[in-house]
Image (cartoon, rainbow, N blue to C red):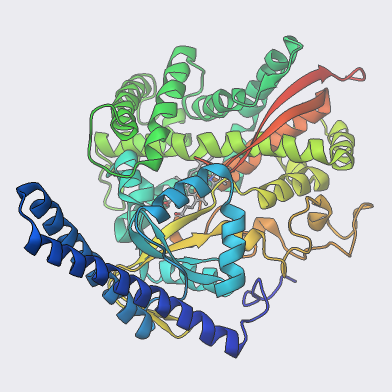
Length: 537
Ligand code: HEM
């Protein structure tokens, strides 16, 4: 039995506190309107007194900016009064943006989330780069949002820089009917049973890499997992490893991902965003050549054309037997798939190593369990290995690689918790809020893989049993998101992690040092690790 989806992370906010929260949110706007009005009055008076053209122009500019700020604060104030905007401190322009960048890069995300959750509950207003959105992460909030997705009441709302970096054809950018058709085309090739077809090539690639990492006898940076993740996807998709192409893609993706924190989508020469868009063009050229080669080597009726993800993207047809995708759409989708599985997989591996190194009993139990796995690896045995899966799930819970995503209200107003959200209102759903929900996960800030052990396991501990099935894809474990945009590569990612962890701990003693937390572009830990071949292997 899983917990009720309506449980909330904190005690419900009491009546008196609720009223003071509402008032403090209103007072924020009243203070700002008063302050901006003072600027406006001062600037108007100074304009009148100006004798120099420069000070005249400056004061006119200050007046106009003050007017704009007053207008936007009044709109927000009215939205609060009309219950269109939940409580939440929005802060002063520029100061709040600097604070946001500092919070994201310096690791204050959990604290700022805890602060907001304690003060406002699991649904609150926040601002990124001048855009107000509504954060939500309670079980009832996520359930509501993901159901809205399915009813087409909400749709994807990536920030504009991410929309441009992914490209107009990418599945993650689609909405409505075309998104459904695209998902229907791709889902069978990412289904849990289907991805087991990739087990052999994943395992071969993994054994090879582990040998390379161990043979130098030194500590290595977890950065090597980036190339590994790319190679795994590449080999699974194209059937072989073209080292030069993989290295080029790796470098270009590094630059490409630099565009994720862009404050403007203007292509200003030399900025990280401009460089990222240039990297995007290079990636698309590489992918274009890969498609040509694939078509040449694998005609439509060939086995690889029928049974691989890339084959599906290239030759997939809709129900009227028309080709699904133009060449540009194919390229955007291949880029989307490579990106989606690249840094997330990398972060998952290094984070798992970090948590295991901090919890030696869990590492020992894992090594003991995987030592008995039969050869060749069997996907069912991997799926049912209790400690292996419990460690992976607990590591993902502690540090979800993707912290959340965005949705916006589609055409009709929607209602939740006595609020009304107009068309275009943006939501930022928080995976981290769910995985740090104390009512779901007791002592949530402590790694404890026993939460996910089955009741018949000798290490099972009823005191910490979370009673949650991480594979069920519910809102109590939303590592792979939810709704219509739920992760396409979920089963692929789970298999990758199982194979890597099984092979690594079956054959090697693992030492880890120098852990460093990273929050961007994915959440997790960077480490250095050293592999020593086990004597008994
Ligand atoms: C641990 C690894 C991974 C994590 C934590 C993860 C997480 C997520 C999350 C949270 C979303 C939902 C975003 C949203 O709600 O808008 C998502 C979407 C997606 N993921 Fe993953 N992902 C992982 C690995 C992969 C892999 C390996 C692939 C492909 C090979 C993949 C392909 C995708 C795609 C294509 C989407 C967009 C789906 C759509 O918009 O319809 N992911 N992922």
